[in-house]
Length: 240
Image (cartoon, rainbow, N blue to C red):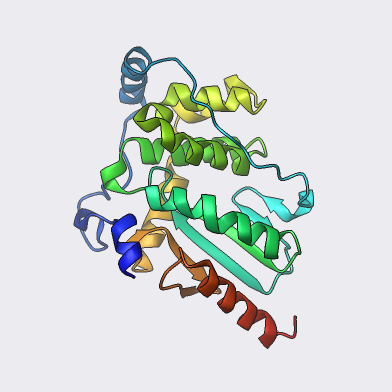
């Protein structure tokens, strides 16, 4: 737990359940205001794209990929990752643990991985905008490639999480840019991201990344050996 506490980000107390004020983990922007925000971002943020890398998912059966879920539909073990695209620890998890899970379990059809949005207040406005961008990409079947671009963008700082840069990511992935832009600027997935945040709070989660395996919270999600051991234990119980 010591390692996790150094790298993961705690949730602001203002987002605790039961508060009358709206959750601060998600940026609340009106329809007109977001256009002003985007206009400012477009002028302030440099237009130079940062180099990013995207994993290939071509070796995963298409039927095993559904928006923010990847893996065998019949898998008896499900991992739920509650993450924030601007969280450095989440970025590290996706560079170190996720690739091993892909190679050892997901591609073999043994487990299913779900990504859940947990945008933290200290990372706003980028965290919520990035979460919505991932969902807009999911509308066009590209959640996981966009997921990878967003995490890779951490190396470029705040500029990587401007709306302009995310629209560029969508173009790089070959998505319909106009549809994506309308989705992002119109905040079409605002309610979905907020609901995910509310669910994280109701589960009592207080840091990112938080990893649940078949509903049980993992003490240290950065410890692949421990994560793997628990997966193997659950698979053994079912005779797999």
